[in-house]
Length: 513
Ligand code: ZN
Image 1 (spheres, rainbow, N blue to C red):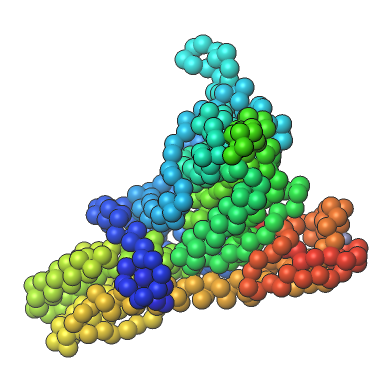
Image 2 (image 1 turned 90 degrees about the horizontal axis):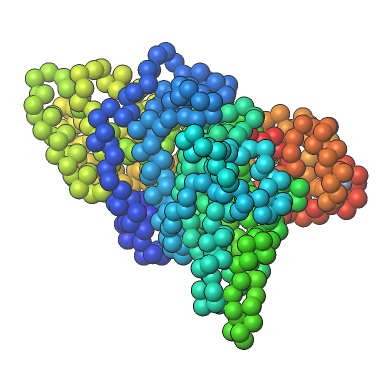
């Protein structure tokens, strides 16, 4: 609780460095109608039908419009984009601790793109190509980046000269294009990924790059903790690693239906790309050496995770860390005291804003119930009600998005509201952790595995042979997600392989989005 208060509001609790990112974002709630663009008709589908619920909540809560006339390309509504911007402002603040931000071109010449053999093989069937400039055919086709290794590394070869230039740690937040042939879905599987944070680092040797892999996994863990999204980290099997990497560490979360969503990856690239692109440096003894590299990516799937993991039958449930509006004030106007209440609400709003909170007053001429419905749908963490009785009693009534009601004194309201927001964050994180814990099942037979995969992630022992993994995947229609599992709910130990019975290690199996 204290930690989240420090991060949210810069309240000193004597714990660690203060993060003030939240006050650096321009207040986006001044957008006049950004959270009221899609039609709201009838009740949402129940979240037990997750797919139907997800599609409807994305539309009705003004996250994305799916009506753009190109398959797999979606349009951010302003409210969704404000949520996206708060999330990425926070992600940038984490990366800026040891990286610098940059921006590379969208187009990659075919000659560079085709240099790294494994990398091409991994992406060849999903690249969009630009073949013409106006009416003329281009001499060298240009790829729309599906990811930027082949755009960035030829430049790194020019920039890295000596050991003094290393480590080099840059990142960018860009759109990337992938010609997805699977069923597309907003924020989850897109042909234009609109918000791909990709970090690319260069190091003197493999061990230093490996330390960076661990550091970036730590950043990802911190990022998702602040979003209240529980994660499991594992090492992807070799056949599923990033094309051209030594190994891939993946970050997964569990969705309401028990399927997994990969929401981040960190790759140790070893010297595969530095060999291809000639990224070398002069070491301290004057010798030329090949550099080691890492890359790390997080896409707008992080927003899909926030929406899916926390949402309920009423709509979004947003963590205060990234909610475009953290507090909505609803004036309860009854009898003849309208002017008095309006004035009291204005003072309260100014006070909360001055304390760094993102606040909106809903003074529309509507029934309070309809307003509650609207703001619950949009996931606002805290609703504040102020009516005649509250004025007389010098109090305000606060209801958090999970329905917990608290009456607080009007005096020092901002401090109390911040405390309630911190508590609300803890409540949604606890709820999400419980969900993850309850959807992780340890099994020892393929039959059990099949049964449990209906709505869970499954923990098994596996000998490491691809044949056993292939057989298990085929029999259970799932994927072997990884080994070296890092989760407080999973013991990483040894046991007989679920398929062949030989000595095996803990592995994670799931059905993925
Ligand atoms: Zn086996």
